Image 1 (cartoon, helix red, strand yellow):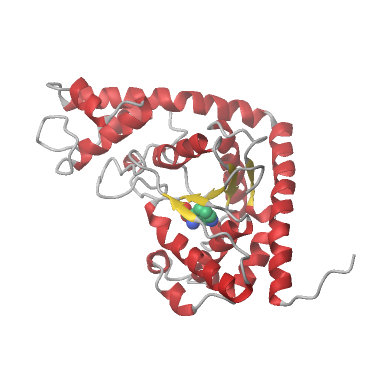
Image 2: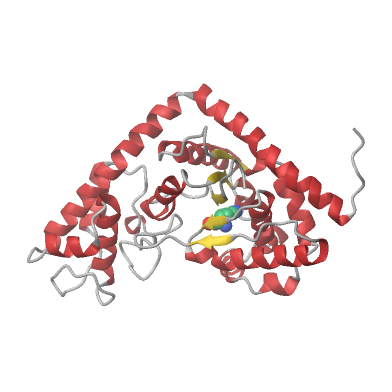
Length: 334
Ligand code: TRP
């Protein structure tokens, strides 16, 4: 608990262009949770280098992501918004936790299997221990809840296992975190292949709406979205393309899928896609404007980066010192 509130931790990688899926599925929900919890929202740049990155691009994207967190409505006075690499406790705790994690456990991680198939020329140790760094992120702040997509659930389970293992040896050191999997609208699928998640690394740019896409591009991508030959707007698994568009429309407008079915009863896909496009445009416009405004305010963003890294380091060090003592590292001389 911090300030009588439960602690929430989450993070995103600054690799690839962020999509509407990242916004509707994650960021928008983070904003809703930010009153109820004491929140740490991290830009996890240390995770990013498990795959080779161009340094200048990574730096630029990290700043853009941090700016986006704020533009999306996370008040940096209330939420701790910071770079993972600015708080050394992440890497330090990850080292210790590495010594409490088994090779066999890490070998079972499906994301490791997927990523090593995709990057067969660079299966580095960091890619393998990625979940341990993620466990360190979470446990460092004694987080109670962790909003994640379904694809990260296995990493949260290993985090809990590591924490429980550590606690069973050394006593109650870590809070055991709970996953928080958002509900509907949480999983936005590709516009070109609704069986796949909308992804920032999709090779087909028409499958994803990027957060910085201009209105024409958004309208074009919506119009081209893959549907089916049923011809009616129904929210059901047999019509995955239409279902996904309903999810997008619902998330943007706040209407329920049933309302959307009624609204478009008897109408064609053309009309519906137009409405979806317009809803997305009006959802993203204020966000894009706020990003543009914040990007100009360099001093403000810099102050957020500095102050929040200090705040995060303060809480991180509390946990880290305790853990270091438990495992038998010598006390610091003050
Ligand atoms: N692995 C997460 C992802 O790719 C990002 C992440 C890193 C994260 N550390 C975290 C998410 C801690 C939640 C909590 O989506």
